Amino acid sequence: MQKTNPCILCDTIEFSTIHQKDQWRYLRCLNCKLVSLYPRPTPQMLMEYYRDYLSDKPEDISKWEAMTKPIIAKSADLINSRSRTGGKKILDIGCGYGFLLKEMKARGWDVQGLEVSQTGREYAQRNWNIPVYSKPLENLGLPANTFDVVTLLYVIEHVFNPLSLLNEINRVLKQEGFVLLRWPHTTPVVKILGPLSKKLDLYHTPYHLYDFSPRTIGMILSKTSFKSVQTMIGGHTRPADRLSRWSSILFGQLSDVLFRLSRGKILLPGISKTTVAFK
Image 1 (cartoon, one colour):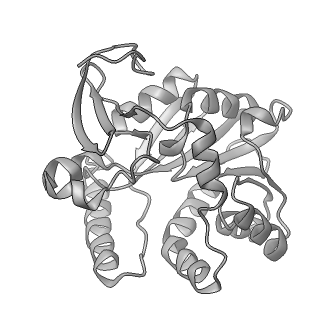
Image 2: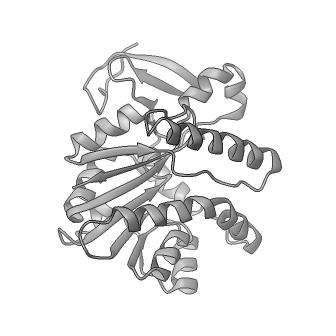
């Protein structure tokens, strides 16, 4: 099929439908294979949703912290081990309740966050004394060459214009600074599950605007002038639900073993990935 807006990576206008829920369709570019949502909700609709998407209930916040704890620890270790600039200034985009920034602050980093949810911002500010911006990065007008690291954990798939955001991240990073992205790799699971995937709604329609693969995440980073791109497994979450937790542990550990034994060549499809790229 053809649609008006070309692929953001390769400008192709030929797509195939791989998943549909109501009026929303996920289309795969026939050239570069990037998966994107069509039609898309407006930026205003997305902003309204994300302002209220974080719960203020203590039990829900505790579950969120427990679920993300392994990813936070892996990401923090990766940040410390890959840092090249000699500085320790970090910006976490979509910082949620501030758990990654809390960890980095404990490790001696100068931390700042960006979060459109008022609940998340206030929690991070109140509990960890972390400054958190409320506007999109492109609207802040921050000075160039400010940060040593910028992180986005489960954010890039939600971004209306990822090229614009990554270009701005590149601008605010110091030379030899790096961006760290954590992102879901959903399409292989949708293909395996077939019709069942429509009931599970693994894309969280319509809020995942894109579904990246190691190839397409590398393409978008190269297109926004990043270099030395490396994608890895980077750990797994621990959901509160028992079945989801054991599934995450099983496949997360399997993918990590395969990645290490293959010296980084095997990235199990369908498993969330972590990518690092330098300015």
